[in-house]
Structures are given as C-alpha cells and as structure tokens.
Amino acid sequence: MSGHEHGSAPAPMVEGAEVSSVRLLATLAIFGALAGAILAYTYGKTLPAIEKFAGEKVEAAVREVLRDPARLDTLYLVKDKLSRTRPAGVAVGDATKMFIGLDANGARTGVAVEEAAPGFAADVKLMVGFDPATGALIGFKVLAQTETPGLGDKIEKDTTFAPRFNGKVAPIKGTKNATTDASTVQTITGATISSKAVIKVINKAVATWQPRLAAFVKEGGQ
Amino acid sequence: MTTELAVAPEAAEPLVPGAPPPAPLTLDFWRGIADDNPVMIQMLGLCPTMAISNQVSNGLGMGAATIFVLVCSSFIISVLRKIIPNEVRLATYILIIATFVTVADLVMQAYFPVLSKTLGPFVPLIVVNCIILGRAEAFAGKVGPLRAVADGLGQGLGFMLALLIMCAFREVVGSGMFLGHPLFGPNYEPQIFMIMPPGGFLTMGLMFLAMGWWGERKKARLAEAIA
Image (cartoon, rainbow over all chains, first blue to last red; front, side, top):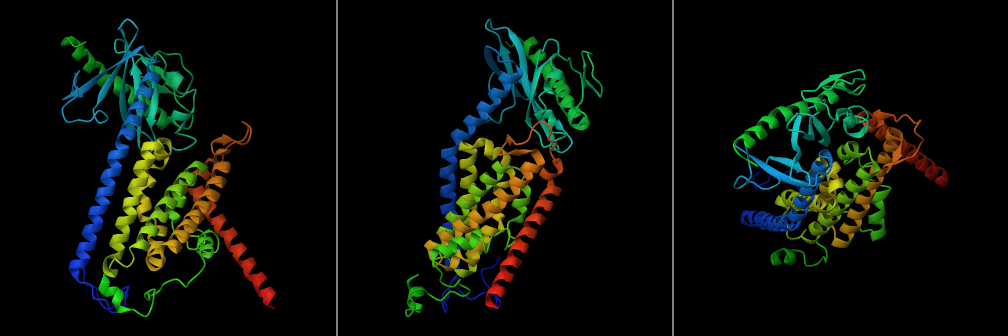
C-alpha cells in the first residue's frame, strides 16, 4: 500500500493538517515495535503454563492407555532409531517419543505411541498402547478427531467402542458383526470409515514401532 | 502533534468527519445490545457466529474473548486517535486488534486449555471479525475513550447475546443438553443436523425472522401512538 492517497480518500482527521510520509512510516514502525514487545512478553509469561498443560495431557493419555503402570520411561526417535537422549535443539513437546510402561519390578508392561491416519474428515490422532512382544493392544485414547458429530465422533464418545479393542492382536480387521476373533473388531454402525481409521492408526502404530523397539533392544538398549 | 492542535483552536474537540452524534454513555452501551445489535441488526460477525454456535460453552468463551478484544482495542484506538494519521489508520487498527487477539489466545491456551481446544481455530479469526474493525472505524476512532469503551462493551455483549441465543437453541435441540448437562431423558433422540452447519443456517434464519417481527411490531406501535 502506498502512503499517498488520492482525492477520493476520506478527509484527514484534522482539517488542513499535512502529514508527512516520514510520520506515517514512524507511526507504523513504533506501533509494530510496541506490539512486538507486548507479544514477546506475553509469550514468555504463558509458555511455561502452556507446555506444562501439554505435557500433563500427554502423560495422562499414556497412563490411561497403559492401564496406569508403576513407572514411565521415555525413548526419543532420532533418525528413525530409538534413543535415550533427546535430539539436540528439539523441544520436549516437539520430539517424537515412545513411552514405556514399567511395573514395580522394572519389567516392561507395554509401550505407548502417538499415531495418526486420515479419517472421514481429517486426521484421527490416537495414543496407542500395546504389548511390544505380542502386538496385542492394551488400550487407545483419541487425542484429536474432527469426525461427524453424532456419528463418526462415536470413536471418541461411545464408551463401548474402545473396550472392543482390548487384547486384540494387530494387524486388526474390522467387521460389521459382533465377533470374538482375536484380530477382528466390530465397527460402529453408521461410522464404518471412522472406525476403520482407528483400526488403521492402531495397525500403523504397531507395525512402525514394534520393529523400532526390537532394533533398539537388539542393539543393547534398555 | 502540537501543530495539529493549533489548527483548530476554536473547538475543544476537533471536527471529525462522520463522528457519531453526542450521546450519554448509557445509550452508547445499550445501542450495541438491542437497537444496533452487531449480529442481528448490523449483520456483522456472522461467520464466527455460524461456526461456533453449537454449544453454549463455546458461545461464552468466544463472547468473552471478543468482548476483551473489542473493549481493549476500542480504548487504545480512542486514546491514540489524534496520534494515528488518517492515511495509516486501518493498518494501525489491525495491528492493535491483532496484538490483543494474540494475547487473548495465549492467555486462553495457558489458563483455559479446554476452552482453547474447542475455540482453537476460531480465536485468531477474531482479528478479522468485522465487528471489531467496524467499531474501530465507525466509532472508537472518532470519540473519546469513555464512549469508545461503553460502545465496545455494549457491542461485545450484543455479540455474545446473539451467540448465546443461537448456541442455546442449537445445543438443546441438537444435543439435548444445555452447557453439557443432559436435559431430556435417555429416550430423546438428538437432532444432530442442528449442531452441524445446516442447523446453523436454520437457527440464524429463525433468529432474524424473530428480530424482523419484533422490529415491525415496534414500528407499528410507534405509528399507532403517533396516529
């Protein structure tokens, strides 16, 4: 936008006042600097609370899907390999992690990871907890979904849906009828695509993270 | 700045083109709630109204955030109205508004995370909510700070009122709940389309219909009183 305006522009605030372009620039520069300062201050003040909440939310989800283990352990994904140390220059909230649940004796009870896959509307994001030895699901929790209210969002809101997955061994398949098969789950009526998205995320989580943990353990990782 | 004040020494308040006529503060306040409601009469801010009005809690959060931004930006814009050159006023207004919106967004993320999660994508859009820039341009940039705050508060509450009417109707019919509390027994089948976009259009149409009917009735009564 040019500072110069033509005859059709509204009259200046004070009749007859000539405003130099230096003043126009100075005004915008000063307001910009002030706005920047205010935002930097607010950001610094609110960041700890925002990060604390995000961390608490993730931990609560991990505890839920691993059925409240005695202790939690965290591994970071660095260049497609699991590592005990966080990659340099990456914030805790931004790092890709695998959470490991341990019982009171330090034995691994299960692992939890975040995975996502496209649902009916947008990505369905889950925290998936499974037994890395057998690939059997311990539990999952929906972290984010924008499925159709009243239909697809039952993957999160229907309390009878998540328990159908308990103990099922990945790769899981979906079916419309009630089933007792070890790898088959009954989908929600009217929300087949959303149900299948959940299955897809779980299968993806187990298929990607099980080998990663196996490789980590094989190389002597604890 | 001092040269400007010297230009019109005869008037205490310099003549501002298109300034609203003098009015008591109470009138500036009430105008936004009833006679000049931003949503129902001025038809501004319809986009956020449509998008978030399927739950009463959303309406409360969005309304509160908008009131905060509207009152703060109206005040600052009014205080600085003689310093901001006419040629760059819109850019400056938007900068002020955007700063307050970002502050509101960060504060909500930090201290009201649940609300922030539902309103998440809509909060940054308060920047382009035409009610706020509209009030800055039509009112706050031309009057003193007290009147600007009264107007901002009134317009903000008027926006919230319209939001709450829509939210309450859509949540009760569409989910069978009010503020998350179930109202009817388990046998009530929620009319899901009411919480989806078509229900928004329908509710908005019904609300405008009611407002139009009310306005016509008022006009008829006035005509009767004169005759």
